[in-house]
Image (cartoon, rainbow, N blue to C red):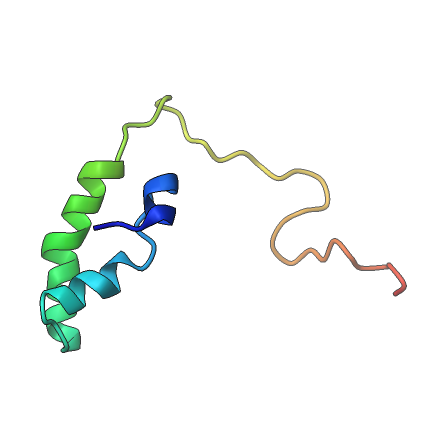
Length: 77
């Protein structure tokens, strides 16, 4: 059962660890299988939503930003 924080924010903070323990899972392989086959499908059923718009949500950064650019260059600290 989710805690207060999880109910308030409708998230699954720390749920995986508790669910694995409740299921008696102690091995990495079994944990990965549980997450893949049980936890993620339930999580996605609860939280997945179709996008509001069909177009991409990403926009170009524009002037002076991006990979390889240091926005703090030239500033004396």
